[in-house]
Structures are given as C-alpha cells and as structure tokens.
Image 1 (cartoon, rainbow, N blue to C red):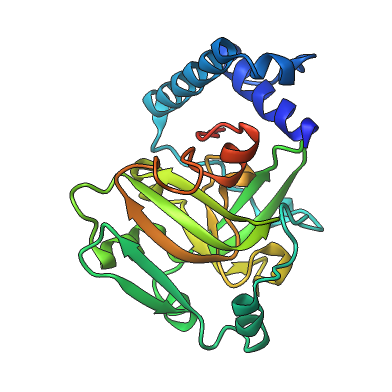
Image 2 (image 1 turned 30 degrees about the vertical axis):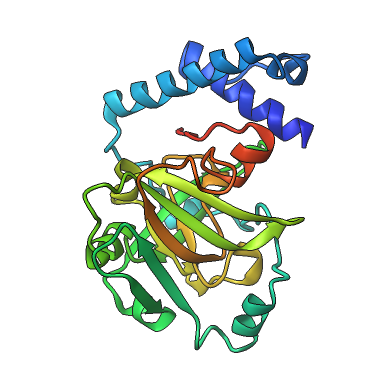
Amino acid sequence: MTQRKILTRRGLIHGAALGTGGLLLSGCDKLYSQPGFRATLESAEQWHQATQRWLGGGALAREYAPSDMSPVFRANGNRSVADPSYRQHFDQAFERWVLTVDGLVRQPLALPLSMLRTMPQRTQITRHDCVEGWSAIGKWEGPQLKHVLDMAGLGEKARYIVFHCADSFGAARYYESIDLADAYHPQTILAWRLNDRPLDEAHGAPIRARIERQLGYKHAKYVMRIEAVESLDGVYGGKGGFWEDSSGYAWYAGI
C-alpha cells in the first residue's frame, strides 16, 4: 500500500514539474500528512489536469497493432468478488444482470448485457499503465460511454459520472468517477471483451470502464451502476474514488 501511494504522488509531483517521468521521494508519507504539503499536491493535480486538457484533452491515446499485444494481460485490483448478488449473476453467466444508469438523467436505464453487446461497438488496442509500475497492451471492445449517456439524457446539472462497482476492499465498496470531458471521450468505453473473449472475473466481468487517457485504477471493474451527479462531495468519501478516499491517490490520473 505504501509503495502504491509513493508511486502515485511521485507521478503527480514530477509530472507537474516536468510533464513526464517520476522521482521517488523519501519520507513522502510523512510529508503528505502535513496540510500545507497536501494543498501543494492538490494544486499540482489541478495544474496537471488543466495543462493536459489545454494541450489536447480530446486527443486519442495511442492505439497499437495486434502484433504489439502482450502475451498475458495481467489483472489489476481485485481478482474476484464476494458480493452475493454478483456471485449469483456470475453463476447465471450474467443473463439476468442489468446495468443501472441513473442520477441526474432524464431517462433512467436498466440495460442488460445483451443490449450492451449489440450496441455500436468500439474496438481499440491500447496500453494499460498501472500505478504499481507495470503495463500491458490489450484489445478492448464495448460501446462508447457517451452513447449510453445520450440514451439516458444528462440533466443540465450533471458534472461527473460515478461508476459503482460490485467489489470491495474490506467494508469499503469500490467506485471511481470521471468528469464529462473524459466521459464523452471517444476512447472511453464500457468494455465487455478483452482480446476477443468476454471478460473473465479477474478482469472485471461483466463490464469495466476503459478511460484510456488515465492510469489503470480509474478503469473501474465490475461496474454495476453508472450515476450522473453534480458534485462528488456526497459520494462515499467525497474525493472521487476508493483509492482517492483511502490512500490519497490523485483524482485526475491523466497520462
């Protein structure tokens, strides 16, 4: 856990200063406990987000050729889910599972997996960069999130999209969030297939979010519900994601 926190903050600090790479800072956890240092990191994160968006927030992440795909695509985060409802859906091959889309939308949705699979699909071969220091290239397929949001019709006050997931760390449910700029990015998809096969449990079945211009912990697995909200303040711990709430990860993890 400590290594993950250092790597995340290292990328944020050095990325803000130099735009790339990283610098391992000794004593980072002690510094992070100081309010002044936390404020500096938060300002750096905001600077990083604004700079990346200004330099081309709508640009596509690099896509690769089939020959570049990794022989094994390592799973990140949880590899299994204990939630009884999920286990029942898993045993039924997700035949009765539905994706709930609600919150600040004009038309709440309950989309079965079969519908998500028959919607217009985007296929992309991209690199997954994990905050733990490894990467892998894989082929993802699924509908663009923007098509699902258009079906629901976002309300005027909607500013963020929250992914509610089936997996937990202890008593804390996993979740993540993105703003509308990333939600409507063409490479943000609800992937149900990896390397031409339906997702297995370790990789996030039945669907996972792919937000290709951000680090891997933003790519929520086991997505059960998508909620449109005006603010993240009242959502779980209020910082926009499980790792952001529990370990001080940057909410904006752009790469």
